[in-house]
Amino acid sequence: MSSPDFMASVFEDARTHRFFTDQPVPDDLLKTLYETMKFAPSASNTCPMRVLFVTSDDARAKLLEAVGDGNKPKVASAPAVAVIAHDMEFYKHLGTLAPHLDPESFAAQDEAKLKMQASNNTWLQGGYFIL
Image (cartoon, rainbow, N blue to C red):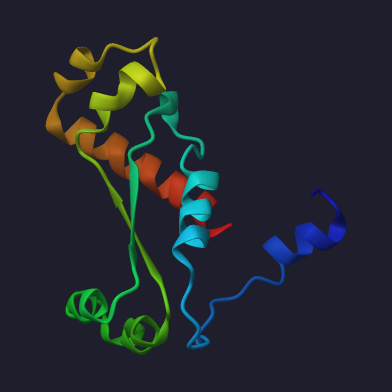
């Protein structure tokens, strides 16, 4: 995986896609994508990222209401859209994901600190999702 061709495909040749086929993306492929990257690195293995795959016309119509004008054509034509978000109660899963941490201590932190941790780690995990 560390061949020059692979590195070039990830870091030099990757571009934003603006046009898509009209073929649906199979649910099992979306599930495999999520299962492959759900444990992308995050501080203390907190894993706050959540992914919502939008594939139906009704869900896409709702999403289009929230998307910036420049992205509307891409979202409207993509057979699947991944909405990346964070779970503000990510600490509830620490018993499984990071048993060395105390979920109650995490929950007792200042809300701004929790939000920063969730947001920063979701950006990190989202970067891995894109790769």
